[in-house]
Length: 166
Image (cartoon, rainbow, N blue to C red; front, side):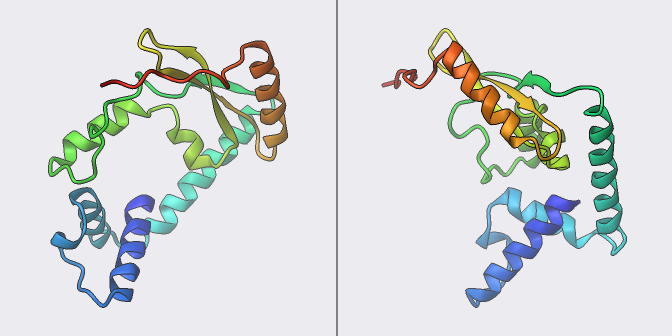
């Protein structure tokens, strides 16, 4: 709800600035789907979604009263081929499935606004970085920077680059 309504507002304003009419042919299918979905929402949907996100943020704050850090994968699978998550995909359900199957671990932290970082601590057989995500309590960005410095000193990644395919 929040993503769709924010996308709709942003796109509508930009199209107006350009002096154009917002129609399906001026944006990609994924964006148009968000605009169309936002048009179906009632006025109470937005504050209900905001309340839900704030509730999740408070739950995470409670979790961090006991635990200093959350460690998780960054992605559910190695980096996908270019074009897999194209927003000009007319099959919206296929796009959504591909997105959710790829990034299930980051959504909670995007929603709650917690500081998180991903570092390439592993590498696939083909040389692609495999990220590990650390998430900290609100306001603990400095903790993440200190952790990143220690991890890189222990297992440097600055000189690793994947091979380019032909």
